[in-house]
Length: 571
Image 1 (cartoon, rainbow, N blue to C red):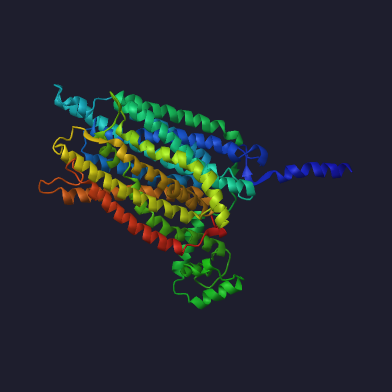
Image 2 (image 1 turned 90 degrees about the vertical axis):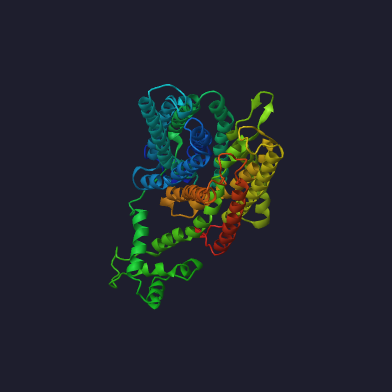
């Protein structure tokens, strides 16, 4: 009787244990006092501080480059795109280090420390004499030149140190947050899908605060203070992250071979067996009792990795079906990744030409009070913050009732909707720019770039709002897609692949700007990106991006049509 009572009392505890996870001391943990929204709240708070810090320097960077550092508009736009590209590609390195060596928790801590160092050095660089304040001063030219050169070197070193630190921080924090939900538990599995929505909500909340507060401080008070506050916020973020350590779930790493080695061996074996007849592969699949599936019919050349080159079947010389399917899962991502680049090129414009465009317009709110041009980006974040709760609490349940899918619509459908809204935003941007140029011409301001064009900056709001709505669909959809569709051990890498879309997109945008600048600005002509925006033609550029987006959308729909979800996912 006593034994029966003891067994009944212990059963809830056994059911409450989370398989495959340990606490920070390496002990088994219980679902009731670990992970879930409890841990995710700490991690989302960390993301808010990190986004506040990053956008605190990047959102208004073009103003600093064209102001204190004295660069041209086209050069500054290329520099901003280059930084954005580096910051979005470096997560591939950070994710590799985390998944192969340090783990996500340690990588986040190390990256945070480097982040704080970079922001501190950036603040220091802002205290030095700048180009704009040095022009006209009767100082020794050699000393002045040396001082300015040191400032520029320190500034860009600090900037790229921040980008490097973000490379370790960004993919690991989000993957670590999603790891706090157990996919084997029905309730936590459903909550995990909502996590990506609320993650992006928190990220945009941090960005929104930055754009309203920091941009004003940078434009009207001090760049030193404007760079110093993000440094303080990163310190706060690190403390918050450490405070949640006792609640986190840490994934158990088995003694299995590195996923990079497993997947790499599949490709090597497939290449070595490229002369193997299809009949031999079919015979091997039949011998293993493998039933033909849609997945097995795709990329059949990788099935050759199931055989050893010498015909041997010794352990370690052939690949398993699971390993082949992991390799196929990564290849399936390639078309989605490539077609998303069109969306990423459009995404790069909000912090460059949109900001310069707004700087020429009437930004007055009341007499003597103007909204900073970079703060207009806050309408992207504001629309996201307002729409994500509507999407998560209203749209998803309604769509779920119609489609029967847990997330309402599939991840690929969500991404495609975002791409369509992105293309629409470029059309709206082009039409607004045509109106701005016409207003400048009507008032005789074509050759007066420093005079405000009498057209309200609120005309730009629709294109910013469309940007935000596009992000709710495409950005969050891409995050969830690249997390969900890769092997479990490579989820940091999956999110790094998602971020790399925007890195490559920023570099493509920078390359496109440079080519157009050279082609349209020769022989004394004003280029599409002339410093005098009243003589430039940003409208042509926006129409070009709209056309690219339409082509990208068509290619995306074609590739999505043949995509097969990994692990039977229908999200």
